[in-house]
Structures are given as C-alpha cells and as structure tokens.
Length: 270
Image (cartoon, rainbow, N blue to C red; front, side, top):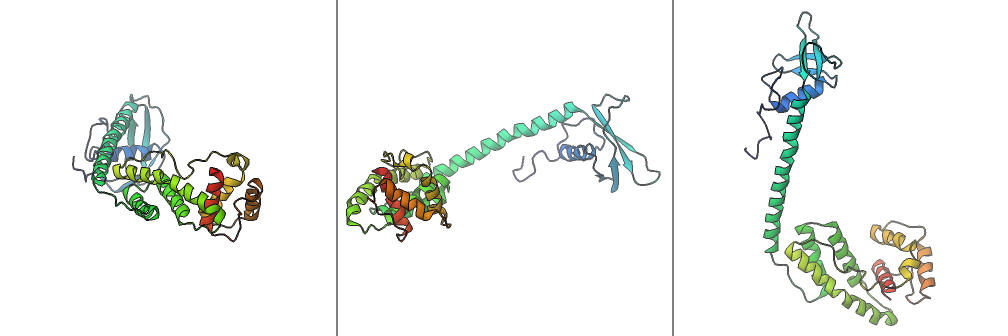
C-alpha cells in the first residue's frame, strides 16, 4: 500500500450485501452511518438527495436493521438499505487492527529518531550554568519533554541566582555543588535519548520538616514562581517562611525571584 494513500481506499471486502456497488468500504460505511442516523444521504451516482426513514427490523430479509431512503423527486422509486452487524464488525475490526500497524510504524520511526539523535554529541561545558543553557536547547530539540524542560529551567534559576547575604553564601554554594550530579544525569539521559525520571532533581537533599509544615504555602509559592502572576498572599508566604525558619533566610519581597526560589530550596535542604 502506498504510504501516501488513504488506508483501505478502494477496498470492497467488509460489505458484501451493499446497495451501492460503486462505493468502497470506507464510503459505504459513511453512507450507512448517515442513513441510520436519520440524516439526508447524497447518492453520488445520481446527484439526488434522499431522506432516511427510522431504522426498523424488516420481515422481508435477514438484515439486522433496514431503512427506506425516500427521494424528494416525485415518481422516483424509494431505495431499501440494509445493515448487517457481522459486516460492521468486520469493517471495524479491520480498522482497529490497523492501529497496531500504525503503532509499530510510529515506534520504528521513534527508535530511528532516538538512534540518530543519540549520535549527535551534546556539547560539554565546564561551567554548570553554561551546561544548563546547552541542555535546555538540547532538551527542546530532542524530545521537548515537559518534565525535563521544567527541571532544567528550575536548575537555571538556581544557578543564575545571586546570593548577596554572606551568611547564606557557603550554604548556597554547597547546595549548587550537590546538584552537579543531576546536571550530569540530565546530560547523559538526553544524550542517550533515555527520558526517564531523574534520580534526584532540584529537590536533592530535601529532608527537613519544613516541607510538611509549609504544605499549604509551598504549592502556592511554586505556582507564583513559575507563572509570574500576581498573588495577593505573596507577603503571607514570606511571613510564614521567615517564621518557621526563625528568619534564617531573610525572605524579602524585594529579592529577585530567582534568589527567592533558591532560598526556598536551601530552606528545604536544611
């Protein structure tokens, strides 16, 4: 079968007892669907337009259901259209089985794509932030996976954040260093086109109780961070963060969004 041709075009295998011999299975199915749905039916051979009766069980044949197709032209003979469930099942089974053929072809094409992309070496950078920029481009180009794109964007925010508080500088550097294996894991997975859950994302070492204590505020905070939309409870989140951490991270609404995001990650990793 030509790959550019409509599947099953011209085939006449499913409907043996067809009223319109010129129609292939695909077209005849559309005629049956229209007729037994009480819709007008356009008959291509005569360019006439007919109207279907309500479906009924005829005692004159062994069809499962029958409809009469009435013409709006005076004196034109009515047509009788029969439907056989066995033929419908044969038609539908053939089409549904063809989905497996399509699925196998899609899988084959995807595997070819994986192989081709895995041979394209991802550029290695010594600077973590520069490497993340490369990975963001590669991720969007290779599979554009939402999960990986999100992880990379979060990591970029963390590494772009500028810490000005000397008391937090060492903690931030240590946290960023702990994320280096995650960056390498992303690079390895993208290189091999193996998009699986990461062993550790930007929440690495998140073992404090703050996550449970701030179970309401954190999801709202992340929504604000990632959407950029105004949140009237913004000040409340910061107040809660400072309260539970006893002011250790000095959350302030004047901080850059990226710095705030990093501070929350440091809070959860503490």
